[in-house]
Image (cartoon, rainbow, N blue to C red; front, side, top):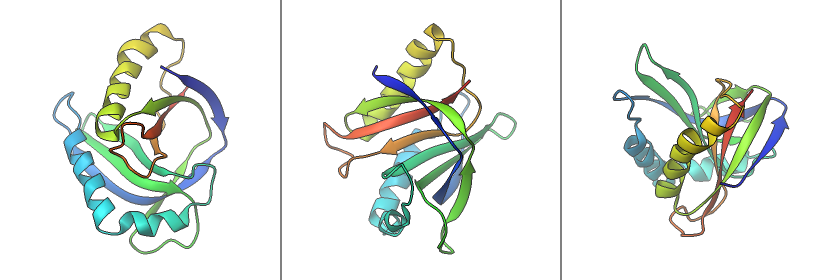
Length: 159
C-alpha cells in the first residue's frame, strides 16, 4: 500500500450528513453506497462542487463519529470549503491533525472497502501509529467512480 504522512491545520467541510445504524461489526457500506448514488443523481454533487475552496479539490466521504452506545455512524458527503452555505448543507470543522494518506486505485465501491480492510488488518498492526479518534476521510479525485483507474485517497488521522 502506498501512503505518505502529512500534517494539516484545521479546515472546514461543507456538505450533507446522515446518521446510519450499524449491525455489530458490520458497517453500513451498502447504505453509504446508496447515498452516493442518490446524491450523484439528485444534483447534490453539482451544488457542492462550486463550494470547493481548499486544498482538497475532490468530493469527500467523511466518517465523523461512531457510537458504540447508539450503534450509529455519522457519515458526510462534502467538500472542503466555507461560507455561502445553502440551507441544504451543514458545516463541520475538521481539527488539525497528522494524517496517513493512502493511495487508492480502482472503482470506488470495491477499492475503498478493500483498502480500509488492509489498513486495519495489515497496516495498523505493523506500525507505531494509532487512530487519533478524529474524522476519517475518503477523498474522491476521479469524475468516474466506476473507472478501473479511478483515483482516490483514504486519510486516517493518527497520533
